[in-house]
Image (cartoon, rainbow, N blue to C red; front, side):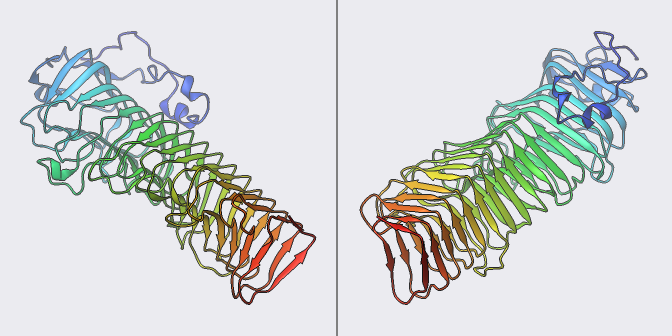
Length: 504
């Protein structure tokens, strides 16, 4: 059967043209008019599919003749599936739901519902929209859509309701396999999350991942305004090495390992919100954002809230060549030893710009690991701040700068907690601190490195301790035009040059 859509509209603009503009005005455009005039449009109920949720629709789907340009339309209703619908190596295919709910049959023991393309037989030009997948029954949950296409992937308005408690694959996998290909995943909602495998009849390791972008992804994929979590094995997991993923907006909550785990050259996160405010027994490391690898990873205008932390807010891992955290807000509450932002020792250059960290627990708000030599890959912190009630009960310093060649420029720290809370300890050689204000209960600034330059800083202990401590063996330290309350404690054999300072 060949027929037009319900509104009879067929547009001449290709989905490829619209996807090219996905970062701009495309959000205001409708994709309902992107099919070509020769599309085969099948209303699955007119082909015999049961919309009442009584009989499986798989035999009907298997009998529909599929060809390039086919659209399967699901009117309002509930549809039961007891097998996988698999279609590979296509050139144009659409699944359109109109308030359509898909329910896996109680006796279905497979792992997929819709498997559209594979890594070795990818499709091309795929559109999926408008379905809800119902996992409310006990021991349900599987991969509802796995889409692997060369180019032109558009997925919109999909939702999963109910807990994924089967111990099978997580609900979504999306890959664009061609390096020049592009795709967009928009308004995908999986807020109810999934159970750890040990609490399910399934056998996958740890538990399901919410959305996975696998190592077969080589193109560019947008992930826009999605709601994800809590999942046992990452919320959004991008494991690509060669592809690019851009997260735009969305809410990511309470997933284990990481809520957003990003990799790939020039992959980035913009305008997202990440929250950890609930911890299950098996949640051992609920990171907010984990940057895994890439020539350049960027986090911008993003909020990370750790209300019940057991992992870092943002982690920059060893295989990241260059990372930037910009215009971002991090809030860490609780009564545990944790970190807000951590930089691994082999990570490359990192910039932290116009970023504010409110740190209300013990541990490091910023922990910079790495070689202590003065020629290490630089970490540059500019116009940023650390505030809050953090204390020194587990890690005295709000910032621990173990890497050499760090610059802190107009970086302010104010921590009001007790237990010998300090602002920063410099352990890497060749670091520079410019025009920052450091205010803590104990000694704010501690130097244990060579070649450190302090210029224009203000350092004050609210409990009347010295403003600065220089540890035994520190050499080539310059303190210039700075205001230090209660003086500098030179502890042991040190080499410090003073020029134009105020000691109050």
